[in-house]
Structure formats: structure tokens, C-alpha cells
Length: 189
Image 1 (cartoon, rainbow, N blue to C red):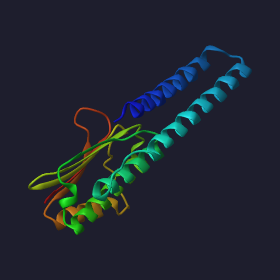
Image 2: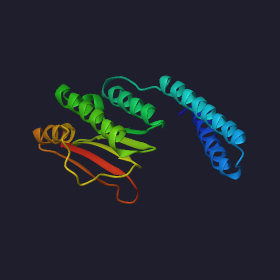
Image 3: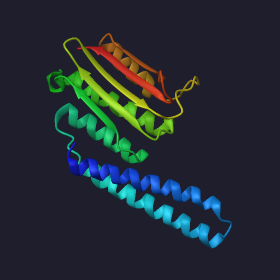
Image 4: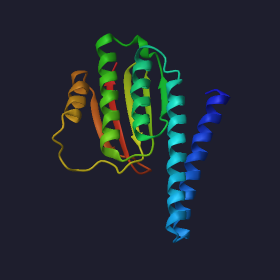
């Protein structure tokens, strides 16, 4: 991350914190006109932070191949949630067979769709690791965590079937040491 990127991300964080402080200050007055002005200012600050986040994401170096595909899905999900995703890639991603790489991209898209649709998360992290014997895709979020209710959706069964096709697994479970969910797709290479 360049110094400019880090400074811009810090500015977004500061704007978001400022909006939260102003929003909390609204409770300090009963004057409707003051409350309205504070509310308008909070909305404007949030809009500026969103615009800056969008510009940052538009200039993000997502790369090519599988890394670019997965990064693009993560950036889109982050944009929809209003956060900058934490991304981690390790190993020779572009050495995967085309069919496996396509499945990794499809599973990443579905995992991130789950985060956007169901988690109520404020942030998430995605990691993709390819080593000599395994391909491990993991998404962690800070949302409400998975529920035990059966879903009528096709996403989880599809990700499970894609993993089983390679002799691997898909799981979604609560984060071990934090709020939210951990989705893990783990298949032999």
C-alpha cells in the first residue's frame, strides 16, 4: 500500500469517526433546528467518506487472473457494505487449472454475496492461499454470525458441491474469537 493510499484510507476513517461523534452529539440538544443541522452535517460527511472510498476502490490495483477476479468481487462487496476489505493472497494463484480457478472465483463471489446479504457486517477479510497441496479460500466478517435456520437459497449447497467435486469441504461457522462468521472453502490442489 502506498503512502498516498494509507493517507486516503486514514482520512476515510477520520471522516467516519467524525460523523459518529457528531451523531452522538445530537443527544446533547433538544433544539430541533440544531438537531437538523447536525443530521445534515452527518449525512454530508458520510457522503464524502463514501465518495472517497469509491475513488480509492476504483484506483485499487486488483491485478489480473484469479487474483484480479477475487479482488474485484471483494472490492464490489466492500463498496456495497461501505468498507475497504482486507485482502490476503499467497501462493501461485495463476498456476491452478482453469476449471478450479473458475470455481474459486465463483465461490469467492458467493461467499461475499452472503456477507453482503446476511451478515450486517461493517468489515470483512478475505484470504486465498494456494500451496503445494491445498487451495484455501476464507472470508471472515464482523457481522451477526451464522444462524441455524435452514436456507432456501442455493449458495451454500452450490459451494459445498463445488468443494466436494474436488474432495474438499465448505463450512460456515462463528468466528472463534470475535463476532461474525468464518466461511472456509478448502480443496486439494
